[in-house]
Length: 66
Image 1: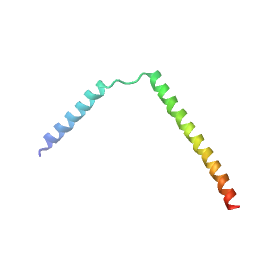
Image 2: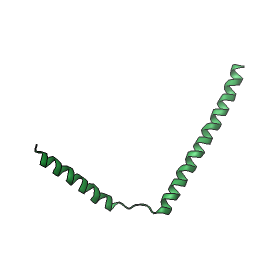
Image 3: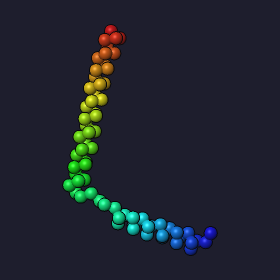
Image 4: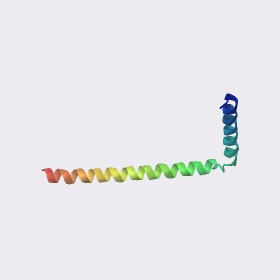
């Protein structure tokens, strides 16, 4: 395979990537902030839930061990 053909393929690949990126329907700033807030809220909720389960299981194990 010739070096020129390899670089031609790479060049075409990046042109295609740019063309596809222009077709993407990017979210607005407000949508991005809203989605970020949702992800953070769900993550914190799950962390609190798992923390509570941990405390409950620790209490149960202490009772079983004692």
